[in-house]
Amino acid sequence: MSTLLTLTTLVAEGTDNPTADFSDTPWWLSLIKAAIIFVYLLVSTLMVIWFERRVIGRMQQRPGPNRNGPFGLLQTLADGMKAMLKEDVTPAKADRFVFTLAPLITATMCFIGFAIIPLGGEVTMFGHTTPLQLADSSISVLFVLAIAGIGIYGVVLAGWSSGSPYPLMGGLRSSAQMISYEIAMGLSLVAVFLYSGSMSTSQIVAAQGSVWYIIPAFFSFFVYVITMVGETNRLPFDLAEGEGELTGGFHTEYGSMRFAMFFLGEYINMFTVSALATTMFLGGWQAPPGIAAINDGMFNEGWWGLLWFTVKLWMFMFLFVWLRGSLPRTRYDQFMRFGWKFLIPATLGWVVLVAFFRGAQNGWFGDAALEFAGRRFPVSSLAIVALVAVGALAFGWWWDSRALAKEAAAAVAPPEEIDPYAGGYPVPPLPGQRLRETARVGAPALPEADPVTPKRPDGPAVFDFTDKEAPRG
Image (cartoon, rainbow, N blue to C red; front, side, top):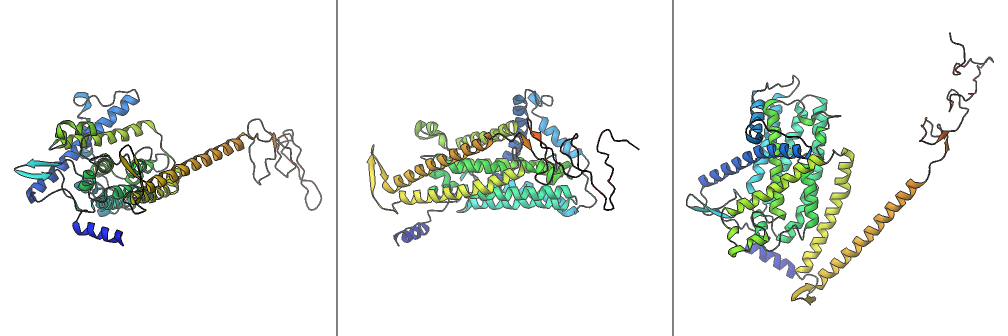
Protein backbone atom coordinates (compact mmCIF):
# COMPACT_ATOMS: atom_id res chain seq x y z
CA MET A 1 0.00 0.00 0.00
CA SER A 2 2.84 2.38 0.83
CA THR A 3 4.46 1.61 -2.52
CA LEU A 4 1.23 2.48 -4.34
CA LEU A 5 0.96 5.75 -2.43
CA THR A 6 4.56 6.58 -3.28
CA LEU A 7 3.97 6.02 -6.99
CA THR A 8 0.77 8.08 -6.84
CA THR A 9 2.66 10.91 -5.17
CA LEU A 10 5.38 10.85 -7.83
CA VAL A 11 2.80 11.07 -10.59
CA ALA A 12 0.99 13.91 -8.84
CA GLU A 13 4.22 15.85 -8.39
CA GLY A 14 5.08 15.44 -12.08
CA THR A 15 8.57 14.07 -11.42
CA ASP A 16 8.41 12.20 -14.72
CA ASN A 17 8.05 15.44 -16.66
CA PRO A 18 10.95 16.58 -18.88
CA THR A 19 13.58 18.80 -17.31
CA ALA A 20 13.95 20.76 -20.55
CA ASP A 21 12.15 24.10 -20.28
CA PHE A 22 10.57 25.31 -23.53
CA SER A 23 8.58 28.17 -21.97
CA ASP A 24 10.85 30.79 -23.55
CA THR A 25 10.89 29.16 -27.00
CA PRO A 26 8.61 30.81 -29.60
CA TRP A 27 7.41 28.85 -32.61
CA TRP A 28 9.81 30.55 -35.03
CA LEU A 29 12.76 29.59 -32.82
CA SER A 30 11.59 25.96 -32.94
CA LEU A 31 11.69 26.18 -36.75
CA ILE A 32 15.25 27.54 -36.58
CA LYS A 33 16.29 24.67 -34.29
CA ALA A 34 14.66 22.17 -36.67
CA ALA A 35 16.70 23.66 -39.53
CA ILE A 36 19.87 23.45 -37.42
CA ILE A 37 19.23 19.75 -36.72
CA PHE A 38 18.53 19.13 -40.42
CA VAL A 39 21.77 20.82 -41.51
CA TYR A 40 23.70 19.11 -38.70
CA LEU A 41 22.58 15.68 -39.92
CA LEU A 42 23.21 16.42 -43.60
CA VAL A 43 26.72 17.73 -42.98
CA SER A 44 27.43 14.80 -40.66
CA THR A 45 26.26 12.39 -43.38
CA LEU A 46 28.55 14.02 -45.95
CA MET A 47 31.46 13.72 -43.53
CA VAL A 48 30.81 10.14 -42.43
CA ILE A 49 30.70 8.79 -46.00
CA TRP A 50 34.12 10.33 -46.67
CA PHE A 51 35.32 9.23 -43.22
CA GLU A 52 34.20 5.65 -43.83
CA ARG A 53 35.98 5.39 -47.15
CA ARG A 54 39.19 6.88 -45.82
CA VAL A 55 39.28 4.74 -42.67
CA ILE A 56 38.50 1.49 -44.48
CA GLY A 57 41.04 2.44 -47.14
CA ARG A 58 43.67 2.85 -44.44
CA MET A 59 42.65 -0.47 -42.84
CA GLN A 60 42.92 -2.24 -46.21
CA GLN A 61 46.14 -0.46 -47.23
CA ARG A 62 44.69 1.62 -50.07
CA PRO A 63 44.33 5.39 -50.37
CA GLY A 64 40.56 5.82 -50.54
CA PRO A 65 39.09 8.95 -52.18
CA ASN A 66 41.83 11.49 -52.83
CA ARG A 67 40.97 13.24 -56.11
CA ASN A 68 37.89 15.44 -55.59
CA GLY A 69 38.94 18.25 -53.28
CA PRO A 70 41.70 18.18 -50.65
CA PHE A 71 42.04 14.65 -49.23
CA GLY A 72 38.98 13.67 -51.29
CA LEU A 73 36.62 15.74 -49.12
CA LEU A 74 34.36 16.57 -52.08
CA GLN A 75 33.95 12.95 -53.18
CA THR A 76 30.55 12.69 -51.45
CA LEU A 77 29.30 15.78 -53.30
CA ALA A 78 30.48 14.24 -56.57
CA ASP A 79 28.57 11.05 -55.78
CA GLY A 80 25.45 13.08 -55.02
CA MET A 81 25.70 14.94 -58.34
CA LYS A 82 26.13 11.62 -60.14
CA ALA A 83 22.98 10.25 -58.47
CA MET A 84 21.02 13.37 -59.48
CA LEU A 85 22.10 13.17 -63.14
CA LYS A 86 21.57 9.43 -63.60
CA GLU A 87 18.51 8.18 -65.45
CA ASP A 88 15.67 7.32 -63.07
CA VAL A 89 14.17 4.06 -64.34
CA THR A 90 10.93 2.58 -62.99
CA PRO A 91 10.27 -1.13 -63.68
CA ALA A 92 7.32 -1.83 -65.96
CA LYS A 93 5.51 -3.98 -63.37
CA ALA A 94 6.16 -1.68 -60.40
CA ASP A 95 3.47 0.17 -58.49
CA ARG A 96 4.68 3.66 -59.38
CA PHE A 97 3.16 5.55 -56.45
CA VAL A 98 4.33 3.12 -53.75
CA PHE A 99 7.67 2.70 -55.56
CA THR A 100 8.29 6.44 -55.03
CA LEU A 101 6.71 6.61 -51.57
CA ALA A 102 8.91 3.89 -50.01
CA PRO A 103 12.27 5.75 -50.12
CA LEU A 104 10.58 8.92 -48.86
CA ILE A 105 9.27 7.05 -45.79
CA THR A 106 12.68 5.57 -45.07
CA ALA A 107 14.50 8.91 -45.30
CA THR A 108 12.04 11.15 -43.47
CA MET A 109 11.40 8.88 -40.48
CA CYS A 110 15.09 9.01 -39.51
CA PHE A 111 15.02 12.81 -39.38
CA ILE A 112 11.87 12.83 -37.25
CA GLY A 113 13.37 10.44 -34.71
CA PHE A 114 16.22 12.90 -34.05
CA ALA A 115 13.78 15.58 -32.83
CA ILE A 116 13.73 14.46 -29.19
CA ILE A 117 17.51 14.02 -28.84
CA PRO A 118 19.08 16.69 -26.56
CA LEU A 119 22.16 18.03 -28.36
CA GLY A 120 23.14 20.25 -25.45
CA GLY A 121 21.94 22.11 -22.42
CA GLU A 122 20.28 25.50 -22.32
CA VAL A 123 21.70 28.08 -24.73
CA THR A 124 20.84 31.65 -25.66
CA MET A 125 19.54 32.15 -29.20
CA PHE A 126 18.22 35.51 -30.49
CA GLY A 127 17.61 36.75 -26.96
CA HIS A 128 15.74 33.63 -25.80
CA THR A 129 16.97 30.93 -23.42
CA THR A 130 16.08 27.54 -24.87
CA PRO A 131 17.34 23.96 -24.57
CA LEU A 132 19.34 22.70 -27.53
CA GLN A 133 16.58 20.20 -28.26
CA LEU A 134 13.61 20.41 -30.58
CA ALA A 135 10.98 18.69 -28.41
CA ASP A 136 10.60 16.41 -25.40
CA SER A 137 7.86 14.56 -23.55
CA SER A 138 7.46 11.97 -20.82
CA ILE A 139 7.55 9.16 -23.44
CA SER A 140 10.23 10.47 -25.79
CA VAL A 141 12.15 7.20 -26.04
CA LEU A 142 8.98 5.32 -27.00
CA PHE A 143 8.49 7.95 -29.71
CA VAL A 144 11.90 7.11 -31.21
CA LEU A 145 11.11 3.38 -31.19
CA ALA A 146 7.72 4.02 -32.80
CA ILE A 147 9.29 6.12 -35.55
CA ALA A 148 11.83 3.36 -36.19
CA GLY A 149 8.92 0.92 -36.55
CA ILE A 150 7.28 3.16 -39.15
CA GLY A 151 10.56 3.27 -41.07
CA ILE A 152 10.28 -0.50 -41.61
CA TYR A 153 7.25 0.16 -43.82
CA GLY A 154 9.57 1.82 -46.32
CA VAL A 155 11.62 -1.37 -46.59
CA VAL A 156 8.57 -3.62 -46.99
CA LEU A 157 6.88 -1.35 -49.52
CA ALA A 158 10.08 -0.98 -51.55
CA GLY A 159 10.39 -4.74 -51.92
CA TRP A 160 6.70 -5.27 -52.71
CA SER A 161 6.25 -2.38 -55.14
CA SER A 162 9.25 -3.33 -57.31
CA GLY A 163 7.31 -6.10 -59.03
CA SER A 164 10.25 -8.51 -58.83
CA PRO A 165 10.76 -11.61 -56.66
CA TYR A 166 14.27 -10.74 -55.47
CA PRO A 167 13.39 -7.31 -53.99
CA LEU A 168 10.30 -8.89 -52.41
CA MET A 169 12.41 -11.56 -50.72
CA GLY A 170 14.94 -8.91 -49.64
CA GLY A 171 12.19 -6.70 -48.21
CA LEU A 172 10.67 -9.55 -46.20
CA ARG A 173 14.05 -10.65 -44.91
CA SER A 174 15.10 -7.12 -43.95
CA SER A 175 11.80 -6.35 -42.22
CA ALA A 176 11.96 -9.60 -40.23
CA GLN A 177 15.52 -8.73 -39.19
CA MET A 178 14.67 -5.17 -38.13
CA ILE A 179 11.52 -6.16 -36.22
CA SER A 180 13.33 -8.96 -34.39
CA TYR A 181 16.15 -6.74 -33.23
CA GLU A 182 13.86 -3.85 -32.33
CA ILE A 183 12.33 -6.11 -29.67
CA ALA A 184 15.70 -6.68 -28.03
CA MET A 185 16.56 -2.98 -28.47
CA GLY A 186 13.42 -1.88 -26.65
CA LEU A 187 13.99 -4.37 -23.84
CA SER A 188 17.58 -3.20 -23.39
CA LEU A 189 16.33 0.33 -22.69
CA VAL A 190 13.97 -0.78 -19.91
CA ALA A 191 16.87 -1.00 -17.46
CA VAL A 192 17.66 2.67 -18.14
CA PHE A 193 14.03 3.57 -17.45
CA LEU A 194 14.25 1.75 -14.12
CA TYR A 195 17.43 3.57 -13.11
CA SER A 196 16.30 7.04 -14.20
CA GLY A 197 12.62 6.70 -13.34
CA SER A 198 11.62 8.39 -16.60
CA MET A 199 11.34 7.93 -20.37
CA SER A 200 12.06 11.59 -21.07
CA THR A 201 15.42 12.06 -22.79
CA SER A 202 16.23 15.29 -20.92
CA GLN A 203 15.33 13.62 -17.62
CA ILE A 204 17.53 10.62 -18.42
CA VAL A 205 20.50 12.89 -19.24
CA ALA A 206 19.99 14.85 -16.01
CA ALA A 207 19.87 11.61 -13.99
CA GLN A 208 23.37 10.70 -15.23
CA GLY A 209 25.02 13.66 -13.54
CA SER A 210 26.86 11.44 -11.04
CA VAL A 211 27.36 8.19 -12.98
CA TRP A 212 26.70 7.27 -16.60
CA TYR A 213 24.37 4.34 -17.09
CA ILE A 214 26.94 2.44 -19.12
CA ILE A 215 28.31 1.28 -15.73
CA PRO A 216 25.22 0.00 -13.86
CA ALA A 217 23.43 -1.06 -17.08
CA PHE A 218 26.49 -2.51 -18.83
CA PHE A 219 24.64 -5.55 -20.16
CA SER A 220 21.90 -3.34 -21.61
CA PHE A 221 24.59 -1.29 -23.36
CA PHE A 222 26.13 -4.46 -24.78
CA VAL A 223 22.76 -5.62 -26.13
CA TYR A 224 21.90 -2.19 -27.50
CA VAL A 225 25.15 -1.90 -29.46
CA ILE A 226 24.48 -5.26 -31.12
CA THR A 227 20.87 -4.43 -31.90
CA MET A 228 21.66 -0.99 -33.32
CA VAL A 229 24.04 -2.60 -35.83
CA GLY A 230 21.35 -5.11 -36.79
CA GLU A 231 18.70 -2.38 -36.94
CA THR A 232 20.69 -0.31 -39.44
CA ASN A 233 21.51 -3.28 -41.74
CA ARG A 234 25.23 -2.69 -41.44
CA LEU A 235 28.06 -5.21 -41.62
CA PRO A 236 28.26 -7.85 -40.29
CA PHE A 237 24.46 -7.79 -40.37
CA ASP A 238 23.78 -6.28 -43.82
CA LEU A 239 21.87 -9.41 -44.79
CA ALA A 240 19.53 -7.44 -47.05
CA GLU A 241 22.40 -7.08 -49.51
CA GLY A 242 23.59 -10.68 -49.75
CA GLU A 243 25.03 -10.37 -53.26
CA GLY A 244 25.17 -14.15 -53.67
CA GLU A 245 21.43 -14.65 -53.37
CA LEU A 246 19.49 -11.35 -53.36
CA THR A 247 21.80 -8.95 -55.25
CA GLY A 248 20.92 -5.55 -53.70
CA GLY A 249 18.02 -6.70 -51.55
CA PHE A 250 14.86 -4.62 -51.30
CA HIS A 251 16.34 -1.71 -53.32
CA THR A 252 17.60 -3.79 -56.26
CA GLU A 253 15.32 -2.02 -58.77
CA TYR A 254 16.07 1.49 -57.51
CA GLY A 255 18.42 4.00 -59.06
CA SER A 256 19.20 7.70 -59.22
CA MET A 257 17.78 9.86 -56.41
CA ARG A 258 15.33 7.24 -55.17
CA PHE A 259 18.24 4.96 -54.38
CA ALA A 260 20.07 7.94 -52.84
CA MET A 261 17.13 8.36 -50.46
CA PHE A 262 17.66 4.83 -49.14
CA PHE A 263 21.38 5.56 -48.90
CA LEU A 264 20.69 8.75 -46.97
CA GLY A 265 18.18 7.00 -44.69
CA GLU A 266 20.73 4.35 -43.77
CA TYR A 267 23.31 6.88 -42.62
CA ILE A 268 20.79 9.14 -40.86
CA ASN A 269 19.50 6.06 -39.04
CA MET A 270 23.06 5.32 -37.94
CA PHE A 271 23.27 8.79 -36.40
CA THR A 272 19.85 8.40 -34.76
CA VAL A 273 20.62 5.10 -33.00
CA SER A 274 24.07 6.40 -32.03
CA ALA A 275 22.54 9.57 -30.60
CA LEU A 276 20.07 7.48 -28.61
CA ALA A 277 22.93 5.34 -27.27
CA THR A 278 24.80 8.51 -26.28
CA THR A 279 21.72 9.87 -24.52
CA MET A 280 20.80 6.66 -22.71
CA PHE A 281 24.20 5.32 -21.65
CA LEU A 282 26.97 7.95 -22.04
CA GLY A 283 25.46 10.92 -20.23
CA GLY A 284 24.17 12.65 -23.36
CA TRP A 285 25.69 16.10 -23.88
CA GLN A 286 27.42 16.17 -20.47
CA ALA A 287 31.20 16.40 -20.34
CA PRO A 288 33.29 13.43 -19.19
CA PRO A 289 33.61 13.20 -15.37
CA GLY A 290 37.10 14.67 -15.14
CA ILE A 291 36.39 17.60 -17.44
CA ALA A 292 32.95 18.22 -15.90
CA ALA A 293 34.58 18.98 -12.53
CA ILE A 294 36.76 21.80 -13.91
CA ASN A 295 35.84 25.28 -12.64
CA ASP A 296 32.46 24.26 -11.18
CA GLY A 297 31.25 22.63 -14.38
CA MET A 298 32.22 25.40 -16.77
CA PHE A 299 32.50 22.93 -19.66
CA ASN A 300 29.01 21.59 -18.97
CA GLU A 301 27.24 24.81 -19.83
CA GLY A 302 26.06 26.53 -22.97
CA TRP A 303 27.25 25.33 -26.36
CA TRP A 304 29.94 23.09 -24.87
CA GLY A 305 27.37 20.30 -24.65
CA LEU A 306 27.13 20.15 -28.45
CA LEU A 307 30.87 19.44 -28.61
CA TRP A 308 30.74 16.56 -26.13
CA PHE A 309 27.63 15.13 -27.76
CA THR A 310 29.28 15.21 -31.20
CA VAL A 311 32.45 13.53 -29.91
CA LYS A 312 30.46 10.68 -28.34
CA LEU A 313 28.34 10.37 -31.46
CA TRP A 314 31.37 9.97 -33.69
CA MET A 315 32.80 7.31 -31.39
CA PHE A 316 29.83 5.15 -32.35
CA MET A 317 30.24 6.06 -36.02
CA PHE A 318 33.84 4.89 -35.88
CA LEU A 319 32.55 1.63 -34.38
CA PHE A 320 30.25 1.19 -37.38
CA VAL A 321 33.14 1.76 -39.78
CA TRP A 322 35.50 -0.48 -37.82
CA LEU A 323 33.01 -3.36 -37.89
CA ARG A 324 32.47 -2.97 -41.61
CA GLY A 325 36.19 -3.13 -42.32
CA SER A 326 36.87 -6.04 -39.97
CA LEU A 327 34.06 -8.60 -39.91
CA PRO A 328 32.51 -10.82 -42.60
CA ARG A 329 28.79 -11.10 -43.18
CA THR A 330 26.98 -13.56 -40.90
CA ARG A 331 24.53 -16.21 -42.01
CA TYR A 332 20.88 -15.20 -41.80
CA ASP A 333 19.76 -18.20 -39.74
CA GLN A 334 22.59 -17.67 -37.24
CA PHE A 335 21.72 -13.98 -36.96
CA MET A 336 18.02 -14.61 -36.31
CA ARG A 337 18.75 -17.46 -33.89
CA PHE A 338 21.10 -15.21 -31.93
CA GLY A 339 18.43 -12.53 -31.66
CA TRP A 340 15.48 -14.71 -30.67
CA LYS A 341 17.22 -17.40 -28.62
CA PHE A 342 19.86 -15.34 -26.80
CA LEU A 343 19.37 -11.57 -26.89
CA ILE A 344 15.65 -11.44 -26.10
CA PRO A 345 15.64 -14.06 -23.27
CA ALA A 346 18.88 -12.71 -21.78
CA THR A 347 17.58 -9.13 -21.85
CA LEU A 348 14.31 -10.18 -20.20
CA GLY A 349 16.26 -11.85 -17.41
CA TRP A 350 18.47 -8.77 -17.04
CA VAL A 351 15.44 -6.48 -16.77
CA VAL A 352 13.94 -8.65 -14.01
CA LEU A 353 17.28 -8.58 -12.18
CA VAL A 354 17.55 -4.79 -12.43
CA ALA A 355 13.96 -4.44 -11.20
CA PHE A 356 14.74 -6.48 -8.08
CA PHE A 357 17.97 -4.54 -7.53
CA ARG A 358 16.23 -1.18 -7.79
CA GLY A 359 13.50 -2.40 -5.45
CA ALA A 360 16.15 -3.41 -2.92
CA GLN A 361 17.82 0.00 -3.23
CA ASN A 362 14.47 1.68 -2.55
CA GLY A 363 13.98 -0.39 0.59
CA TRP A 364 11.04 -2.44 -0.66
CA PHE A 365 12.59 -5.68 0.70
CA GLY A 366 13.53 -4.34 4.12
CA ASP A 367 15.68 -1.62 5.64
CA ALA A 368 18.56 -3.79 6.89
CA ALA A 369 21.91 -2.50 5.64
CA LEU A 370 25.65 -2.84 6.18
CA GLU A 371 27.98 0.11 6.73
CA PHE A 372 31.34 0.03 4.94
CA ALA A 373 33.77 2.89 4.25
CA GLY A 374 31.11 5.42 5.11
CA ARG A 375 28.59 4.01 2.65
CA ARG A 376 25.37 2.11 3.31
CA PHE A 377 24.69 -1.12 1.39
CA PRO A 378 21.21 -2.72 1.68
CA VAL A 379 21.36 -6.40 2.67
CA SER A 380 18.79 -7.30 0.00
CA SER A 381 20.97 -5.74 -2.71
CA LEU A 382 24.00 -7.72 -1.51
CA ALA A 383 21.90 -10.90 -1.51
CA ILE A 384 20.86 -10.28 -5.12
CA VAL A 385 24.48 -9.66 -6.14
CA ALA A 386 25.52 -12.90 -4.41
CA LEU A 387 22.79 -14.88 -6.16
CA VAL A 388 23.84 -13.45 -9.52
CA ALA A 389 27.48 -14.31 -8.84
CA VAL A 390 26.57 -17.91 -7.93
CA GLY A 391 24.37 -18.17 -11.02
CA ALA A 392 27.17 -16.85 -13.23
CA LEU A 393 29.63 -19.39 -11.79
CA ALA A 394 27.14 -22.23 -12.30
CA PHE A 395 26.50 -21.13 -15.87
CA GLY A 396 30.21 -20.92 -16.56
CA TRP A 397 30.75 -24.41 -15.16
CA TRP A 398 27.90 -25.79 -17.30
CA TRP A 399 29.22 -24.02 -20.40
CA ASP A 400 32.74 -25.42 -19.89
CA SER A 401 31.36 -28.92 -19.33
CA ARG A 402 29.36 -28.66 -22.51
CA ALA A 403 32.40 -27.48 -24.47
CA LEU A 404 34.51 -30.35 -23.10
CA ALA A 405 31.80 -32.84 -24.06
CA LYS A 406 31.74 -31.47 -27.60
CA GLU A 407 35.52 -31.71 -27.84
CA ALA A 408 35.43 -35.29 -26.59
CA ALA A 409 32.76 -36.21 -29.14
CA ALA A 410 34.75 -34.58 -31.91
CA ALA A 411 37.90 -36.42 -30.82
CA VAL A 412 36.34 -39.86 -31.46
CA ALA A 413 38.09 -41.30 -34.50
CA PRO A 414 35.79 -42.14 -37.42
CA PRO A 415 35.56 -45.82 -38.42
CA GLU A 416 38.18 -47.03 -40.87
CA GLU A 417 35.60 -48.80 -43.03
CA ILE A 418 32.10 -47.61 -43.85
CA ASP A 419 29.15 -48.84 -45.86
CA PRO A 420 28.38 -46.02 -48.30
CA TYR A 421 24.75 -47.10 -48.67
CA ALA A 422 23.95 -47.65 -45.01
CA GLY A 423 21.68 -44.61 -44.86
CA GLY A 424 19.85 -45.36 -48.10
CA TYR A 425 21.86 -42.95 -50.22
CA PRO A 426 25.54 -42.85 -51.19
CA VAL A 427 27.88 -41.15 -48.73
CA PRO A 428 31.49 -40.34 -49.74
CA PRO A 429 34.24 -41.50 -47.39
CA LEU A 430 36.26 -39.19 -45.17
CA PRO A 431 40.02 -38.89 -45.68
CA GLY A 432 41.65 -42.09 -44.42
CA GLN A 433 38.49 -44.19 -44.65
CA ARG A 434 37.84 -47.07 -47.04
CA LEU A 435 34.59 -48.26 -48.49
CA ARG A 436 33.13 -51.60 -47.50
CA GLU A 437 32.47 -53.78 -50.52
CA THR A 438 28.81 -54.51 -50.91
CA ALA A 439 26.79 -56.65 -53.26
CA ARG A 440 24.02 -54.15 -53.92
CA VAL A 441 22.30 -54.46 -57.29
CA GLY A 442 23.63 -51.95 -59.80
CA ALA A 443 25.52 -49.96 -57.15
CA PRO A 444 28.92 -51.43 -56.29
CA ALA A 445 30.91 -49.78 -53.53
CA LEU A 446 34.11 -50.04 -55.56
CA PRO A 447 34.64 -50.12 -59.33
CA GLU A 448 36.40 -53.48 -59.08
CA ALA A 449 33.65 -55.06 -56.99
CA ASP A 450 31.69 -57.84 -58.71
CA PRO A 451 28.02 -56.89 -58.58
CA VAL A 452 25.28 -59.45 -58.39
CA THR A 453 24.02 -59.97 -61.94
CA PRO A 454 20.26 -59.55 -62.05
CA LYS A 455 18.06 -62.18 -63.69
CA ARG A 456 15.11 -61.72 -65.95
CA PRO A 457 11.86 -63.32 -64.88
CA ASP A 458 12.08 -65.77 -67.82
CA GLY A 459 15.55 -67.02 -66.88
CA PRO A 460 18.36 -65.45 -68.99
CA ALA A 461 20.77 -63.19 -67.22
CA VAL A 462 20.90 -59.50 -67.99
CA PHE A 463 24.22 -58.56 -69.55
CA ASP A 464 26.03 -56.10 -67.32
CA PHE A 465 28.16 -53.34 -68.84
CA THR A 466 29.56 -52.02 -65.60
CA ASP A 467 32.82 -53.91 -66.02
CA LYS A 468 35.54 -51.90 -67.74
CA GLU A 469 36.48 -54.89 -69.95
CA ALA A 470 32.93 -55.48 -71.18
CA PRO A 471 32.50 -55.26 -74.97
CA ARG A 472 31.01 -52.05 -76.29
CA GLY A 473 28.49 -51.65 -79.11
